[in-house]
Image 1 (spheres, rainbow, N blue to C red):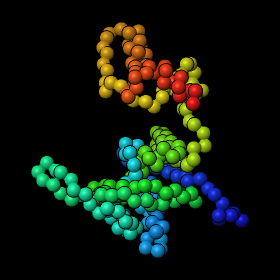
Image 2: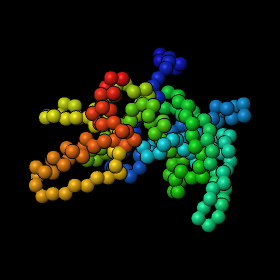
Image 3: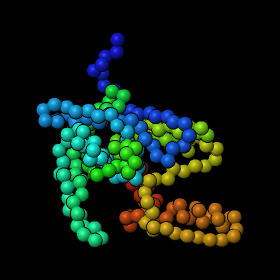
Image 4: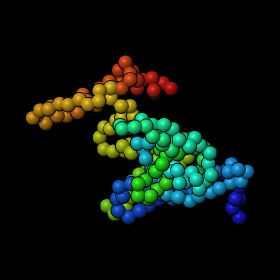
Length: 212
Protein backbone atom coordinates (compact mmCIF):
# COMPACT_ATOMS: atom_id res chain seq x y z
CA UNK A 1 0.00 0.00 0.00
CA UNK A 2 1.30 3.44 -0.86
CA UNK A 3 2.33 5.61 2.08
CA UNK A 4 0.01 8.61 1.93
CA UNK A 5 2.51 10.64 3.96
CA UNK A 6 5.44 10.13 1.59
CA UNK A 7 7.01 13.27 0.15
CA UNK A 8 6.10 13.87 -3.49
CA UNK A 9 7.25 16.57 -5.87
CA UNK A 10 4.89 19.40 -6.73
CA UNK A 11 4.07 18.50 -10.31
CA UNK A 12 1.50 19.40 -12.98
CA UNK A 13 1.03 17.92 -16.45
CA UNK A 14 -1.83 18.99 -18.68
CA UNK A 15 -2.53 18.04 -22.29
CA UNK A 16 -5.11 19.51 -24.63
CA UNK A 17 -6.06 19.13 -28.28
CA UNK A 18 -5.18 22.05 -30.50
CA UNK A 19 -3.09 25.11 -29.71
CA UNK A 20 -4.75 27.30 -27.06
CA UNK A 21 -4.05 31.03 -26.86
CA UNK A 22 -3.68 30.66 -23.07
CA UNK A 23 -2.22 27.82 -21.01
CA UNK A 24 -4.80 27.09 -18.31
CA UNK A 25 -4.77 24.19 -15.86
CA UNK A 26 -6.85 23.23 -12.81
CA UNK A 27 -5.30 24.25 -9.48
CA UNK A 28 -6.13 23.59 -5.84
CA UNK A 29 -5.59 26.67 -3.69
CA UNK A 30 -5.90 26.68 0.09
CA UNK A 31 -5.87 29.06 3.03
CA UNK A 32 -4.63 27.02 5.96
CA UNK A 33 -5.14 29.84 8.47
CA UNK A 34 -8.72 30.91 7.78
CA UNK A 35 -9.80 31.94 11.26
CA UNK A 36 -8.68 28.77 13.01
CA UNK A 37 -9.71 26.39 10.22
CA UNK A 38 -8.73 25.76 6.61
CA UNK A 39 -10.47 26.61 3.34
CA UNK A 40 -9.73 25.01 0.00
CA UNK A 41 -10.88 25.90 -3.54
CA UNK A 42 -10.37 24.23 -6.92
CA UNK A 43 -10.09 26.81 -9.67
CA UNK A 44 -8.49 27.40 -13.05
CA UNK A 45 -5.00 28.92 -13.24
CA UNK A 46 -3.29 30.58 -16.19
CA UNK A 47 0.48 30.15 -16.59
CA UNK A 48 2.01 33.54 -17.40
CA UNK A 49 5.77 33.94 -17.90
CA UNK A 50 5.11 37.66 -18.39
CA UNK A 51 3.84 38.07 -14.81
CA UNK A 52 6.48 38.77 -12.16
CA UNK A 53 4.46 37.18 -9.36
CA UNK A 54 1.34 35.09 -8.76
CA UNK A 55 -2.04 36.81 -8.60
CA UNK A 56 -5.59 35.81 -7.74
CA UNK A 57 -8.95 37.46 -8.17
CA UNK A 58 -10.77 39.25 -5.37
CA UNK A 59 -13.53 36.66 -5.76
CA UNK A 60 -11.13 33.78 -5.04
CA UNK A 61 -9.66 35.67 -2.09
CA UNK A 62 -13.15 36.04 -0.64
CA UNK A 63 -13.85 32.31 -1.10
CA UNK A 64 -10.61 31.50 0.73
CA UNK A 65 -11.29 34.12 3.44
CA UNK A 66 -7.74 35.46 3.17
CA UNK A 67 -6.62 38.66 4.84
CA UNK A 68 -5.04 41.38 2.70
CA UNK A 69 -5.01 45.17 2.42
CA UNK A 70 -8.41 45.72 0.88
CA UNK A 71 -7.53 48.72 -1.26
CA UNK A 72 -4.97 51.31 -2.26
CA UNK A 73 -5.51 54.74 -3.79
CA UNK A 74 -4.53 54.92 -7.46
CA UNK A 75 -4.24 58.02 -9.64
CA UNK A 76 -6.18 57.68 -12.86
CA UNK A 77 -6.24 59.97 -15.88
CA UNK A 78 -9.32 61.79 -14.61
CA UNK A 79 -9.37 61.23 -10.86
CA UNK A 80 -8.16 59.07 -7.99
CA UNK A 81 -9.95 55.87 -7.09
CA UNK A 82 -9.68 52.89 -4.77
CA UNK A 83 -8.41 49.62 -6.26
CA UNK A 84 -8.66 46.26 -4.54
CA UNK A 85 -5.11 45.00 -4.26
CA UNK A 86 -2.90 43.41 -1.67
CA UNK A 87 -0.68 40.42 -0.93
CA UNK A 88 -1.23 37.25 1.03
CA UNK A 89 0.23 33.76 1.35
CA UNK A 90 -1.76 30.83 0.00
CA UNK A 91 -0.94 27.14 -0.35
CA UNK A 92 -1.00 25.28 -3.68
CA UNK A 93 -1.50 21.51 -4.04
CA UNK A 94 -0.57 19.30 -7.02
CA UNK A 95 0.41 15.62 -7.31
CA UNK A 96 0.52 15.36 -3.52
CA UNK A 97 3.08 18.17 -3.36
CA UNK A 98 2.48 21.34 -1.35
CA UNK A 99 3.88 24.82 -2.05
CA UNK A 100 3.30 28.11 -0.24
CA UNK A 101 3.41 31.21 -2.42
CA UNK A 102 3.06 34.95 -1.92
CA UNK A 103 0.14 36.05 -4.10
CA UNK A 104 -1.19 39.41 -5.17
CA UNK A 105 -4.94 40.05 -4.91
CA UNK A 106 -6.47 42.08 -7.72
CA UNK A 107 -10.00 42.90 -8.86
CA UNK A 108 -10.04 40.48 -11.80
CA UNK A 109 -7.54 38.04 -13.26
CA UNK A 110 -9.72 37.34 -16.31
CA UNK A 111 -12.42 39.58 -17.74
CA UNK A 112 -14.26 36.49 -18.99
CA UNK A 113 -13.96 34.71 -15.64
CA UNK A 114 -12.09 31.86 -17.34
CA UNK A 115 -9.49 31.66 -14.55
CA UNK A 116 -9.10 33.11 -11.05
CA UNK A 117 -5.39 32.52 -10.49
CA UNK A 118 -2.29 33.57 -12.44
CA UNK A 119 0.90 31.57 -11.96
CA UNK A 120 3.79 34.03 -12.33
CA UNK A 121 7.55 33.82 -12.65
CA UNK A 122 8.24 33.98 -8.91
CA UNK A 123 6.64 30.52 -8.70
CA UNK A 124 7.76 29.16 -12.08
CA UNK A 125 11.37 29.96 -11.15
CA UNK A 126 11.16 27.40 -8.34
CA UNK A 127 11.18 24.49 -10.80
CA UNK A 128 11.09 23.45 -14.46
CA UNK A 129 8.36 24.40 -16.94
CA UNK A 130 8.15 22.70 -20.34
CA UNK A 131 5.64 23.47 -23.09
CA UNK A 132 5.54 21.25 -26.18
CA UNK A 133 3.26 21.37 -29.20
CA UNK A 134 2.56 18.85 -31.95
CA UNK A 135 0.33 19.21 -34.99
CA UNK A 136 -2.70 18.23 -32.92
CA UNK A 137 -1.99 18.90 -29.24
CA UNK A 138 -0.21 21.02 -26.62
CA UNK A 139 1.30 19.71 -23.39
CA UNK A 140 2.38 21.70 -20.34
CA UNK A 141 4.48 20.04 -17.65
CA UNK A 142 5.91 21.59 -14.47
CA UNK A 143 7.79 20.14 -11.51
CA UNK A 144 9.41 21.40 -8.30
CA UNK A 145 12.26 20.89 -7.66
CA UNK A 146 14.10 20.83 -10.97
CA UNK A 147 15.26 17.31 -11.76
CA UNK A 148 17.81 18.32 -14.38
CA UNK A 149 18.60 21.31 -16.55
CA UNK A 150 16.97 21.05 -19.99
CA UNK A 151 18.74 22.12 -23.16
CA UNK A 152 16.73 21.10 -26.21
CA UNK A 153 19.53 22.04 -28.64
CA UNK A 154 21.92 19.32 -27.48
CA UNK A 155 22.29 16.40 -29.84
CA UNK A 156 21.56 18.44 -32.96
CA UNK A 157 23.79 17.88 -35.98
CA UNK A 158 26.30 20.68 -36.31
CA UNK A 159 27.49 23.30 -33.86
CA UNK A 160 24.95 24.69 -31.40
CA UNK A 161 25.41 27.22 -28.64
CA UNK A 162 23.27 27.82 -25.60
CA UNK A 163 22.21 31.47 -25.33
CA UNK A 164 22.14 32.69 -21.75
CA UNK A 165 18.93 34.33 -20.57
CA UNK A 166 20.13 37.92 -20.36
CA UNK A 167 18.34 40.79 -22.13
CA UNK A 168 20.26 42.98 -24.54
CA UNK A 169 21.56 46.36 -23.39
CA UNK A 170 19.96 48.07 -26.39
CA UNK A 171 16.19 47.83 -26.72
CA UNK A 172 16.66 47.02 -30.40
CA UNK A 173 19.35 47.05 -33.07
CA UNK A 174 18.72 46.79 -36.81
CA UNK A 175 20.83 45.78 -39.81
CA UNK A 176 20.05 45.56 -43.52
CA UNK A 177 21.67 44.21 -46.65
CA UNK A 178 21.27 42.07 -49.78
CA UNK A 179 23.99 39.43 -49.53
CA UNK A 180 23.27 36.10 -47.80
CA UNK A 181 26.76 35.92 -46.29
CA UNK A 182 26.34 39.41 -44.85
CA UNK A 183 23.03 38.29 -43.35
CA UNK A 184 24.65 35.43 -41.43
CA UNK A 185 27.50 37.69 -40.32
CA UNK A 186 24.99 40.25 -39.02
CA UNK A 187 23.13 37.52 -37.09
CA UNK A 188 26.41 36.40 -35.50
CA UNK A 189 27.35 39.95 -34.51
CA UNK A 190 23.94 40.77 -33.06
CA UNK A 191 23.98 37.53 -31.06
CA UNK A 192 27.01 38.59 -29.01
CA UNK A 193 26.08 42.19 -28.28
CA UNK A 194 26.60 43.50 -24.76
CA UNK A 195 23.74 42.67 -22.42
CA UNK A 196 21.48 44.98 -20.46
CA UNK A 197 22.69 46.45 -17.14
CA UNK A 198 26.16 45.04 -17.62
CA UNK A 199 29.27 47.13 -18.28
CA UNK A 200 31.15 43.88 -18.94
CA UNK A 201 31.41 42.06 -22.22
CA UNK A 202 29.26 38.98 -22.85
CA UNK A 203 32.40 36.84 -22.86
CA UNK A 204 33.33 38.07 -19.38
CA UNK A 205 29.80 37.40 -18.10
CA UNK A 206 29.92 33.85 -19.43
CA UNK A 207 33.30 33.24 -17.78
CA UNK A 208 31.93 34.47 -14.44
CA UNK A 209 28.79 32.34 -14.73
CA UNK A 210 30.78 29.25 -15.67
CA UNK A 211 33.11 29.73 -12.68
CA UNK A 212 30.20 29.74 -10.17
